[in-house]
Length: 246
Image (spheres, rainbow, N blue to C red):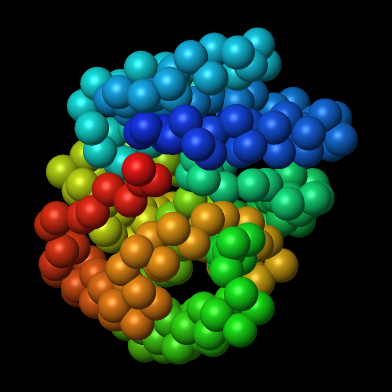
């Protein structure tokens, strides 16, 4: 199997180099067949120039601003059997790639794999609160799946999809701007095979959005859009805030 990293980047000059360094480091350690794609998503800063300084990375320009648009553009440019969707402010932890290959090797029907976020610039106490937030979401997902067969859970910025399954469902929904894009994929791809969310596959990422909007507010917003997208097949929140350093 070949693994393609797709990393959307809109004005990520402060984070993209650290992200790419972590991906390249883990790819070299794993010795797996890995390609790295960054989608320059309508950036107006130095994101594009920074990405071009990494010869191991393929750059794709997507002028239509939007997370699903960027993910779709990266997917179209990729060649891997597995598509790893990682955000530009994330740092891939040790053995993440090996865990991905291990899961897909052991689970023949697996079409989507995901895990939680761990915020590298958040306190241990707040990370514990974030981890606690995942549990009711996970239980709600399992209950919905068992009784209604409608739910599956993916964490945006830390999910891997099997290429054939993503092609079968028509790729990413570019009508969605931000919230609910991961739930929409989970909802549609679950009919293609097995979807696994495991705490054994964390992704280290920035807490900038939580710091800007607040943990409680963001938790309620993500939970509301998760439920709304499962039931009504679209998110309830249309607008989103671009969180970038000044």
